[in-house]
Image 1: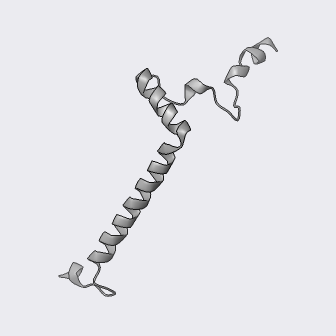
Image 2 (image 1 turned 60 degrees about the vertical axis):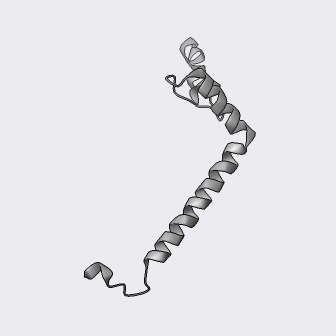
Image 3 (image 1 turned 30 degrees about the vertical axis):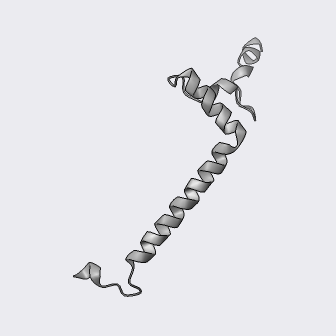
Length: 76
């Protein structure tokens, strides 16, 4: 039973140990800034805004490239 108690740190919990969120090869200052950005909520808003803009641009380019149903340019 002593072995199970010593390995309790490695068991699956709802909240992970704070040191497991980024790989060890990243510089410590970058990890600090990333953690701070994730906690502030600015990262999430920026990410969602960027994804929305990319979706809008993708939609515009796809719709501008189509002449309508039966586009025959690909066969020529």
